[in-house]
Image (cartoon, rainbow, N blue to C red; front, side, top):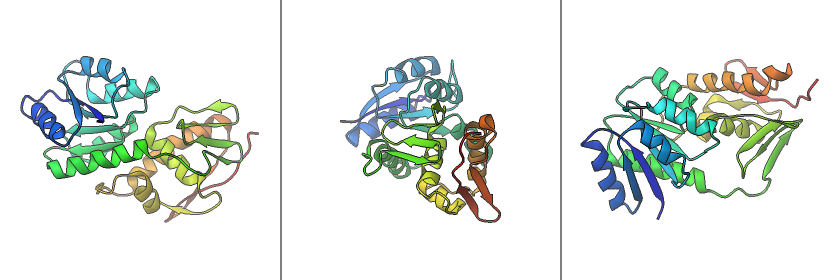
Length: 229
């Protein structure tokens, strides 16, 4: 039975989520404040975390950032009453894997959770380590780097990098990246891809004075092998 941590302070929604997910066969732990939520999440004993943004103690952004800084890659689905691309970009930029605005249906929630759980448990096959030039990504450990230098990537940044590493020197459209990395239920535009490409470049290129990710105007991006100077 897969364990899900729900961090939600709403007195109606929190228990309703626990009842609904338990009825679907999940083992659910409900926490009602951010400080305790971070403590429980850091135990690493959950297959997935459902995390509200507006919480007493610590908000969801700070919790997610702390989890990723600690090296915990447990999938995170953020819940919020806010709705808009800026809020979504902020949530995903802290390391969240998906975002769901309230109110939402149980059908949509369960579909998102199943997708995240599949993504987190699918075994890698074939090439466990992708390499292009001195760039590499270990699919099993979800680590990436350039030569001997390892990057601190968010889950979305890692997924975008591996998407490009799978097609070296080939144009990859923004739409293809959306299809590969984002949940099928995501309805935002491709601008979110640009946000993450910019963040990825700052980590994999800027410190080394290289430019591995080439922009193809009006289409997408291409990863070109570049060695460290």
